[in-house]
Image 1 (cartoon, rainbow, N blue to C red):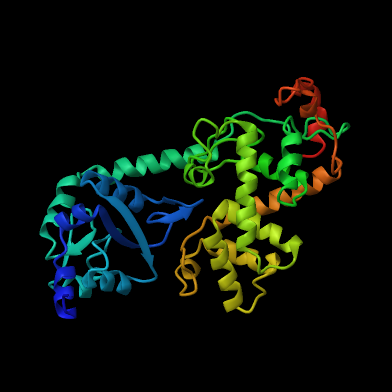
Image 2 (cartoon, rainbow, N blue to C red):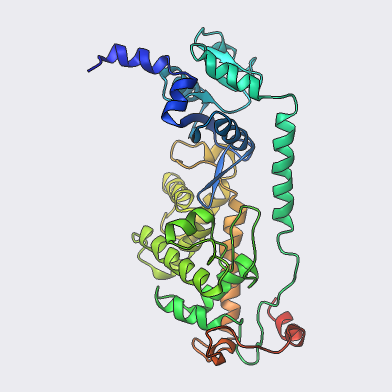
Length: 371
Protein backbone atom coordinates (compact mmCIF):
# COMPACT_ATOMS: atom_id res chain seq x y z
CA UNK A 1 0.00 0.00 0.00
CA UNK A 2 1.32 3.44 -0.87
CA UNK A 3 1.88 6.06 1.81
CA UNK A 4 0.22 9.45 1.64
CA UNK A 5 3.32 11.17 0.25
CA UNK A 6 3.62 8.58 -2.53
CA UNK A 7 -0.07 8.91 -3.37
CA UNK A 8 0.34 12.69 -3.69
CA UNK A 9 3.28 12.24 -6.07
CA UNK A 10 1.30 9.80 -8.24
CA UNK A 11 -1.66 12.19 -8.30
CA UNK A 12 0.52 15.16 -9.23
CA UNK A 13 2.21 13.29 -12.09
CA UNK A 14 -1.10 12.22 -13.63
CA UNK A 15 -0.74 12.84 -17.37
CA UNK A 16 -2.49 12.11 -20.66
CA UNK A 17 -1.73 8.39 -20.74
CA UNK A 18 -3.26 8.01 -17.27
CA UNK A 19 -6.37 9.89 -18.38
CA UNK A 20 -6.69 7.61 -21.40
CA UNK A 21 -6.21 4.50 -19.29
CA UNK A 22 -8.92 5.65 -16.88
CA UNK A 23 -11.14 6.75 -19.76
CA UNK A 24 -12.09 10.00 -18.03
CA UNK A 25 -10.90 13.60 -18.24
CA UNK A 26 -11.81 15.71 -15.20
CA UNK A 27 -12.21 19.42 -15.91
CA UNK A 28 -13.11 22.13 -13.43
CA UNK A 29 -14.72 25.45 -14.23
CA UNK A 30 -16.92 28.19 -12.84
CA UNK A 31 -20.62 27.84 -13.53
CA UNK A 32 -22.11 30.24 -16.04
CA UNK A 33 -23.96 30.50 -19.36
CA UNK A 34 -20.70 30.54 -21.35
CA UNK A 35 -18.76 28.02 -19.28
CA UNK A 36 -20.99 25.22 -18.02
CA UNK A 37 -24.56 24.73 -16.85
CA UNK A 38 -26.99 21.86 -16.66
CA UNK A 39 -30.38 21.87 -18.36
CA UNK A 40 -32.65 18.88 -17.85
CA UNK A 41 -29.72 16.81 -16.69
CA UNK A 42 -27.52 17.57 -19.69
CA UNK A 43 -24.43 19.77 -19.84
CA UNK A 44 -24.32 22.95 -21.91
CA UNK A 45 -22.07 25.98 -22.29
CA UNK A 46 -19.26 26.94 -24.64
CA UNK A 47 -16.43 25.68 -22.42
CA UNK A 48 -18.28 22.43 -21.83
CA UNK A 49 -18.77 21.85 -25.56
CA UNK A 50 -15.09 22.44 -26.29
CA UNK A 51 -13.91 20.33 -23.35
CA UNK A 52 -16.15 17.46 -24.37
CA UNK A 53 -14.87 17.59 -27.93
CA UNK A 54 -11.25 17.56 -26.74
CA UNK A 55 -11.93 14.66 -24.36
CA UNK A 56 -13.40 12.65 -27.23
CA UNK A 57 -10.36 13.43 -29.36
CA UNK A 58 -8.09 11.68 -26.85
CA UNK A 59 -10.46 8.77 -26.29
CA UNK A 60 -11.89 9.82 -22.93
CA UNK A 61 -15.23 10.89 -21.57
CA UNK A 62 -15.57 14.27 -19.89
CA UNK A 63 -16.47 14.83 -16.27
CA UNK A 64 -17.08 18.54 -15.74
CA UNK A 65 -17.19 19.81 -12.18
CA UNK A 66 -18.00 23.31 -10.98
CA UNK A 67 -16.44 25.24 -8.11
CA UNK A 68 -17.38 28.55 -6.52
CA UNK A 69 -14.24 30.66 -7.07
CA UNK A 70 -10.90 30.93 -8.87
CA UNK A 71 -8.87 29.92 -5.84
CA UNK A 72 -10.67 26.59 -5.71
CA UNK A 73 -10.06 26.05 -9.43
CA UNK A 74 -6.30 26.17 -8.92
CA UNK A 75 -6.38 24.28 -5.65
CA UNK A 76 -8.24 21.40 -7.31
CA UNK A 77 -5.80 21.33 -10.21
CA UNK A 78 -2.70 21.55 -8.02
CA UNK A 79 -3.88 18.72 -5.76
CA UNK A 80 -4.51 16.44 -8.73
CA UNK A 81 -8.27 16.35 -8.18
CA UNK A 82 -8.70 17.78 -11.69
CA UNK A 83 -6.79 17.45 -14.96
CA UNK A 84 -7.42 20.90 -16.39
CA UNK A 85 -9.19 24.20 -15.81
CA UNK A 86 -11.72 24.62 -18.61
CA UNK A 87 -12.32 28.34 -18.89
CA UNK A 88 -10.60 31.32 -20.42
CA UNK A 89 -8.07 32.24 -17.76
CA UNK A 90 -6.94 35.85 -17.74
CA UNK A 91 -3.19 35.64 -17.17
CA UNK A 92 -2.95 39.20 -15.80
CA UNK A 93 -5.86 38.80 -13.40
CA UNK A 94 -4.61 35.42 -12.17
CA UNK A 95 -0.90 36.24 -12.34
CA UNK A 96 -0.31 35.19 -8.73
CA UNK A 97 -1.52 31.68 -9.57
CA UNK A 98 0.26 31.34 -12.90
CA UNK A 99 3.59 32.46 -11.48
CA UNK A 100 3.69 29.22 -9.53
CA UNK A 101 5.81 26.63 -11.31
CA UNK A 102 3.03 24.03 -11.12
CA UNK A 103 0.70 25.72 -13.66
CA UNK A 104 0.87 26.07 -17.43
CA UNK A 105 -1.39 28.36 -19.52
CA UNK A 106 -2.30 26.82 -22.89
CA UNK A 107 -3.24 28.34 -26.26
CA UNK A 108 -6.89 27.69 -25.45
CA UNK A 109 -6.36 29.72 -22.23
CA UNK A 110 -7.07 26.56 -20.29
CA UNK A 111 -4.65 25.64 -17.52
CA UNK A 112 -2.94 22.31 -16.78
CA UNK A 113 -0.16 21.30 -14.41
CA UNK A 114 3.37 21.73 -15.73
CA UNK A 115 4.08 18.08 -14.94
CA UNK A 116 1.33 17.00 -17.36
CA UNK A 117 3.34 17.83 -20.52
CA UNK A 118 1.64 15.24 -22.74
CA UNK A 119 -1.79 16.63 -21.85
CA UNK A 120 -0.56 20.16 -22.55
CA UNK A 121 0.80 19.10 -25.94
CA UNK A 122 -2.43 17.31 -26.84
CA UNK A 123 -4.57 20.36 -26.01
CA UNK A 124 -2.30 22.74 -27.92
CA UNK A 125 -2.26 20.41 -30.94
CA UNK A 126 -6.04 20.05 -30.90
CA UNK A 127 -6.65 23.78 -30.51
CA UNK A 128 -6.73 25.75 -33.76
CA UNK A 129 -6.99 29.49 -34.34
CA UNK A 130 -10.67 29.19 -35.23
CA UNK A 131 -11.71 26.51 -32.67
CA UNK A 132 -13.46 28.93 -30.36
CA UNK A 133 -15.28 30.62 -33.24
CA UNK A 134 -16.50 27.29 -34.58
CA UNK A 135 -17.97 26.22 -31.26
CA UNK A 136 -19.40 29.67 -30.62
CA UNK A 137 -21.20 29.46 -33.96
CA UNK A 138 -22.69 26.10 -32.93
CA UNK A 139 -23.82 27.62 -29.64
CA UNK A 140 -25.40 30.62 -31.40
CA UNK A 141 -27.18 28.30 -33.84
CA UNK A 142 -28.66 26.37 -30.93
CA UNK A 143 -29.90 29.54 -29.24
CA UNK A 144 -31.47 30.66 -32.52
CA UNK A 145 -33.28 27.32 -32.72
CA UNK A 146 -34.39 27.88 -29.14
CA UNK A 147 -36.06 31.17 -30.04
CA UNK A 148 -37.77 29.66 -33.11
CA UNK A 149 -38.47 26.17 -31.85
CA UNK A 150 -42.11 26.04 -32.88
CA UNK A 151 -42.82 27.00 -36.45
CA UNK A 152 -46.50 26.07 -36.49
CA UNK A 153 -49.18 27.67 -34.39
CA UNK A 154 -51.40 25.07 -32.73
CA UNK A 155 -54.61 25.95 -30.89
CA UNK A 156 -54.32 25.45 -27.13
CA UNK A 157 -57.83 23.98 -27.10
CA UNK A 158 -59.66 22.07 -29.82
CA UNK A 159 -63.15 22.89 -28.64
CA UNK A 160 -63.96 25.14 -25.73
CA UNK A 161 -67.67 24.53 -26.23
CA UNK A 162 -67.28 20.74 -26.02
CA UNK A 163 -64.57 20.78 -23.37
CA UNK A 164 -62.03 19.09 -25.67
CA UNK A 165 -58.48 20.26 -25.07
CA UNK A 166 -56.62 18.02 -27.52
CA UNK A 167 -56.68 14.75 -29.42
CA UNK A 168 -54.75 13.23 -26.52
CA UNK A 169 -57.20 13.93 -23.70
CA UNK A 170 -57.86 10.26 -22.96
CA UNK A 171 -54.13 9.69 -22.58
CA UNK A 172 -53.84 12.60 -20.18
CA UNK A 173 -56.80 11.29 -18.16
CA UNK A 174 -55.41 7.76 -18.00
CA UNK A 175 -51.86 8.64 -17.00
CA UNK A 176 -52.55 11.67 -14.80
CA UNK A 177 -54.77 9.51 -12.60
CA UNK A 178 -51.83 7.21 -11.90
CA UNK A 179 -49.90 10.02 -10.22
CA UNK A 180 -52.89 11.75 -8.65
CA UNK A 181 -52.86 14.73 -11.00
CA UNK A 182 -55.71 16.60 -12.61
CA UNK A 183 -55.51 15.54 -16.26
CA UNK A 184 -55.97 19.15 -17.31
CA UNK A 185 -52.73 20.06 -15.53
CA UNK A 186 -50.89 17.40 -17.52
CA UNK A 187 -52.50 18.76 -20.69
CA UNK A 188 -51.42 22.30 -19.78
CA UNK A 189 -47.86 21.09 -19.25
CA UNK A 190 -47.89 19.25 -22.57
CA UNK A 191 -49.02 22.38 -24.40
CA UNK A 192 -46.21 24.35 -22.77
CA UNK A 193 -43.71 21.67 -23.76
CA UNK A 194 -44.63 20.92 -27.34
CA UNK A 195 -47.83 22.70 -28.33
CA UNK A 196 -49.37 19.19 -28.70
CA UNK A 197 -46.87 18.38 -31.44
CA UNK A 198 -45.85 14.70 -31.06
CA UNK A 199 -42.85 15.20 -33.38
CA UNK A 200 -41.42 18.24 -31.57
CA UNK A 201 -37.68 18.37 -30.92
CA UNK A 202 -36.23 21.21 -28.84
CA UNK A 203 -32.89 23.02 -29.13
CA UNK A 204 -31.60 20.88 -26.25
CA UNK A 205 -32.68 17.60 -27.86
CA UNK A 206 -35.88 17.04 -25.84
CA UNK A 207 -38.39 14.99 -27.84
CA UNK A 208 -42.06 14.34 -28.30
CA UNK A 209 -45.23 15.63 -26.68
CA UNK A 210 -43.72 15.96 -23.20
CA UNK A 211 -40.23 16.91 -24.45
CA UNK A 212 -38.31 14.10 -22.79
CA UNK A 213 -34.52 14.33 -22.91
CA UNK A 214 -32.70 11.28 -24.36
CA UNK A 215 -30.90 10.65 -21.05
CA UNK A 216 -34.21 10.75 -19.18
CA UNK A 217 -35.84 8.49 -21.75
CA UNK A 218 -33.06 5.97 -21.20
CA UNK A 219 -33.62 6.04 -17.42
CA UNK A 220 -37.34 5.50 -17.96
CA UNK A 221 -36.88 2.65 -20.41
CA UNK A 222 -38.36 4.67 -23.28
CA UNK A 223 -36.72 3.55 -26.52
CA UNK A 224 -35.80 5.84 -29.39
CA UNK A 225 -38.44 4.15 -31.52
CA UNK A 226 -41.15 4.92 -28.94
CA UNK A 227 -40.24 8.43 -27.85
CA UNK A 228 -42.44 10.03 -30.54
CA UNK A 229 -45.40 7.75 -29.87
CA UNK A 230 -47.96 9.83 -27.92
CA UNK A 231 -49.01 7.23 -25.37
CA UNK A 232 -45.51 5.99 -24.63
CA UNK A 233 -44.23 9.55 -24.31
CA UNK A 234 -47.02 10.69 -22.01
CA UNK A 235 -46.82 7.53 -19.92
CA UNK A 236 -43.07 7.95 -19.44
CA UNK A 237 -43.46 11.63 -18.58
CA UNK A 238 -46.10 10.79 -15.97
CA UNK A 239 -43.77 8.25 -14.37
CA UNK A 240 -41.00 10.83 -14.35
CA UNK A 241 -43.30 13.38 -12.71
CA UNK A 242 -44.07 10.77 -10.06
CA UNK A 243 -40.36 10.31 -9.44
CA UNK A 244 -39.89 14.06 -9.08
CA UNK A 245 -42.87 14.17 -6.72
CA UNK A 246 -41.03 11.80 -4.39
CA UNK A 247 -38.03 14.16 -4.39
CA UNK A 248 -40.18 16.86 -2.80
CA UNK A 249 -41.94 14.79 -0.15
CA UNK A 250 -40.86 17.38 2.43
CA UNK A 251 -43.28 19.88 0.86
CA UNK A 252 -46.49 18.79 2.54
CA UNK A 253 -48.88 21.12 0.73
CA UNK A 254 -49.93 19.36 -2.47
CA UNK A 255 -50.82 22.70 -4.04
CA UNK A 256 -47.35 24.08 -3.35
CA UNK A 257 -45.56 20.89 -4.35
CA UNK A 258 -46.99 21.00 -7.88
CA UNK A 259 -45.05 24.21 -8.55
CA UNK A 260 -41.80 22.63 -7.38
CA UNK A 261 -42.42 19.51 -9.49
CA UNK A 262 -43.05 21.58 -12.61
CA UNK A 263 -39.96 23.69 -11.97
CA UNK A 264 -37.84 20.57 -11.52
CA UNK A 265 -39.21 18.98 -14.70
CA UNK A 266 -37.96 22.04 -16.55
CA UNK A 267 -34.83 23.05 -14.67
CA UNK A 268 -33.83 19.96 -12.71
CA UNK A 269 -34.31 18.90 -9.10
CA UNK A 270 -30.82 20.08 -8.12
CA UNK A 271 -31.40 23.65 -9.30
CA UNK A 272 -34.75 23.85 -7.52
CA UNK A 273 -33.10 22.59 -4.34
CA UNK A 274 -30.45 25.28 -4.79
CA UNK A 275 -33.16 27.95 -4.97
CA UNK A 276 -34.76 26.49 -1.84
CA UNK A 277 -31.38 26.62 -0.06
CA UNK A 278 -30.97 30.27 -1.04
CA UNK A 279 -34.49 31.06 0.16
CA UNK A 280 -33.70 29.52 3.52
CA UNK A 281 -30.36 31.33 3.74
CA UNK A 282 -31.97 34.69 3.11
CA UNK A 283 -34.88 34.21 5.51
CA UNK A 284 -37.66 33.09 3.15
CA UNK A 285 -39.84 29.98 3.34
CA UNK A 286 -38.17 27.23 1.23
CA UNK A 287 -41.43 25.27 1.02
CA UNK A 288 -43.49 28.14 -0.40
CA UNK A 289 -43.22 28.69 -4.14
CA UNK A 290 -43.84 32.45 -3.93
CA UNK A 291 -40.73 32.68 -1.73
CA UNK A 292 -38.58 30.32 -3.80
CA UNK A 293 -39.47 31.64 -7.27
CA UNK A 294 -37.42 34.86 -6.84
CA UNK A 295 -34.36 32.72 -6.13
CA UNK A 296 -35.05 30.61 -9.21
CA UNK A 297 -34.69 33.88 -11.11
CA UNK A 298 -31.57 34.87 -9.16
CA UNK A 299 -29.79 31.66 -10.20
CA UNK A 300 -28.93 33.41 -13.45
CA UNK A 301 -26.85 35.99 -11.53
CA UNK A 302 -23.19 35.19 -10.63
CA UNK A 303 -23.61 36.47 -7.08
CA UNK A 304 -26.20 33.78 -6.45
CA UNK A 305 -25.22 30.82 -8.66
CA UNK A 306 -21.72 31.01 -7.14
CA UNK A 307 -23.08 31.30 -3.60
CA UNK A 308 -21.67 28.71 -1.18
CA UNK A 309 -25.22 27.37 -0.64
CA UNK A 310 -25.54 26.50 -4.34
CA UNK A 311 -24.34 23.12 -5.63
CA UNK A 312 -25.53 23.04 -9.24
CA UNK A 313 -24.62 26.55 -10.41
CA UNK A 314 -26.17 28.59 -13.18
CA UNK A 315 -29.79 28.16 -14.25
CA UNK A 316 -31.75 29.92 -16.98
CA UNK A 317 -34.05 31.05 -14.22
CA UNK A 318 -36.43 33.17 -16.27
CA UNK A 319 -37.29 30.13 -18.38
CA UNK A 320 -38.06 27.91 -15.39
CA UNK A 321 -40.01 30.61 -13.57
CA UNK A 322 -42.00 31.43 -16.69
CA UNK A 323 -42.58 27.74 -17.36
CA UNK A 324 -44.33 27.27 -14.02
CA UNK A 325 -46.31 30.49 -14.38
CA UNK A 326 -47.53 29.72 -17.90
CA UNK A 327 -48.61 26.18 -17.02
CA UNK A 328 -50.51 27.40 -13.96
CA UNK A 329 -52.29 30.02 -16.08
CA UNK A 330 -53.13 27.48 -18.77
CA UNK A 331 -54.36 25.01 -16.15
CA UNK A 332 -56.67 27.66 -14.70
CA UNK A 333 -58.01 28.33 -18.18
CA UNK A 334 -58.54 24.63 -18.88
CA UNK A 335 -60.35 24.10 -15.59
CA UNK A 336 -62.80 26.77 -16.63
CA UNK A 337 -63.36 25.13 -20.00
CA UNK A 338 -62.92 21.35 -19.76
CA UNK A 339 -64.60 19.14 -17.14
CA UNK A 340 -62.50 17.07 -14.79
CA UNK A 341 -63.50 13.95 -16.79
CA UNK A 342 -65.10 13.69 -20.19
CA UNK A 343 -65.31 11.47 -23.24
CA UNK A 344 -62.69 13.06 -25.42
CA UNK A 345 -62.17 12.97 -29.15
CA UNK A 346 -59.67 10.18 -28.59
CA UNK A 347 -62.10 7.80 -26.91
CA UNK A 348 -64.07 7.02 -30.04
CA UNK A 349 -61.18 5.17 -31.61
CA UNK A 350 -61.18 1.43 -30.97
CA UNK A 351 -57.63 1.20 -32.31
CA UNK A 352 -56.28 3.30 -29.44
CA UNK A 353 -55.34 6.16 -31.77
CA UNK A 354 -57.00 9.59 -31.60
CA UNK A 355 -60.05 9.70 -33.82
CA UNK A 356 -60.54 12.40 -36.40
CA UNK A 357 -61.84 15.73 -35.19
CA UNK A 358 -63.02 18.76 -37.02
CA UNK A 359 -60.32 20.69 -38.91
CA UNK A 360 -58.38 22.91 -36.57
CA UNK A 361 -59.34 25.97 -38.57
CA UNK A 362 -62.89 25.51 -37.30
CA UNK A 363 -61.65 25.77 -33.73
CA UNK A 364 -59.47 28.84 -34.16
CA UNK A 365 -62.20 31.17 -32.96
CA UNK A 366 -62.69 29.03 -29.85
CA UNK A 367 -58.94 28.80 -29.17
CA UNK A 368 -58.44 32.57 -29.36
CA UNK A 369 -60.74 32.97 -26.38
CA UNK A 370 -58.21 31.40 -24.02
CA UNK A 371 -54.90 32.64 -25.39
